[in-house]
Image (tube, rainbow, N blue to C red; front, side, top):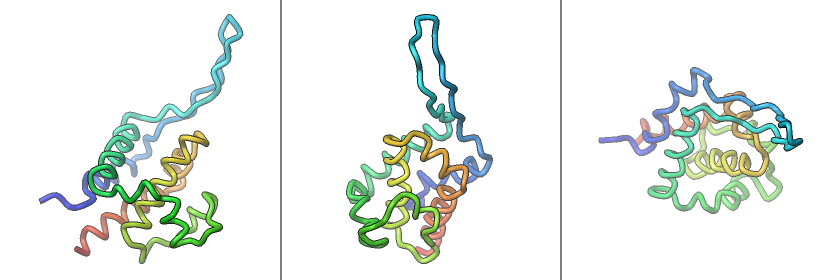
Length: 137
């Protein structure tokens, strides 16, 4: 039987290897058309995103309200800058998944947010916590 979070925690050893992707540079072509820098995520991260959203749709639809969940646990004044300091050692699945979802959604509006949280190890730490929750069950 598959563990509850295995579809997303299976990425732990792959994320530990650090192949996340890189910033694509600013480009200006011969017609003066400018392409702004963007994060070119690795196939690994694109697969993780696909599987995380699939997990959310199938098993955690409550994550659509991730902002409400964070306010419940972190207070109404939470912001993305506080997320790296959230201690998840005693957090439940709702908060841990909401932290990940917040970063994924923030990346849609502030490109590079996900890359930052991958590089600083927080996504990995949150995935490991979900793995620990699986073992406790």
